[in-house]
Image (cartoon, rainbow, N blue to C red):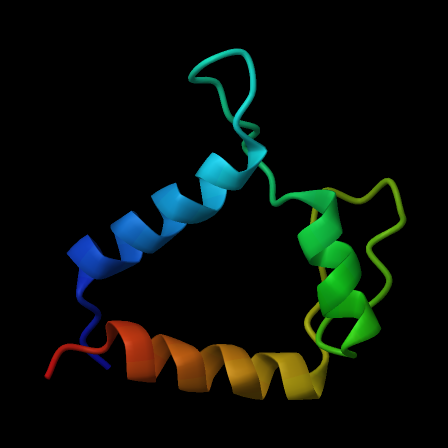
Length: 75
């Protein structure tokens, strides 16, 4: 799959802006409310751990691939 990196970069920037604080600073990670919602929907394994990574469930992986193709695939 060919990815439109301009669209992807803009989406990541928008997601990062959800953690905005102190004027223009953002956290490098994903907002905890988002990871909690993804867990509640069964798209990731329990994010409440000391690990710096998340584990996608089978359903989450399928959805991620589909959305990536639909939203960011080059046409």
